[in-house]
Image 1 (cartoon, rainbow, N blue to C red):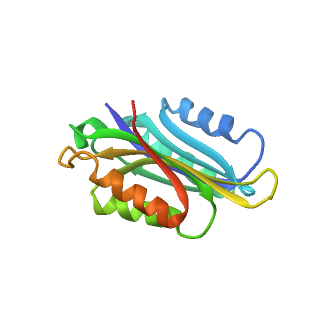
Image 2: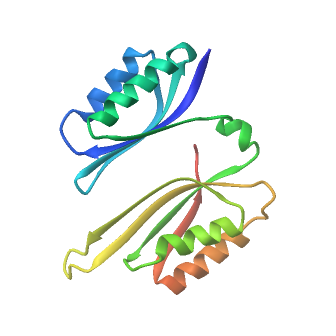
Length: 177
């Protein structure tokens, strides 16, 4: 049998981290099912869903111990339900946000989604500089799962109102997962 494990790893960025980590997992019979990886400042962060043979779990613990001794911060969590099991009938949407950067944008949007019981599946944010003025610009793309109990567009209208108050453009569209 196989188990699904969420593995997070952070450490000082260097060439070859992804190769090294995926080789260790492959040597244990692990398969990366889904992942997100990014350099954030001078650190490199990895977030992975890994399927692993049950008989390799003890070896995974030793491998993680070796990574920690090399200065990495590593956590693992065994997962229970699959997405399909826990979100049957939910509708996927994409939310795009663009505008002048300022504190609180992510919090305000997350608060509205939480109030409506909408689950954030993924969220990518960035700040860049405007081409001419150099002013900081914020962008976000989020994939969310909307429960089947929500009626039509009430939550979308609320998000658009919040966008107006935050001086950012918010676009919501159905997504294909």
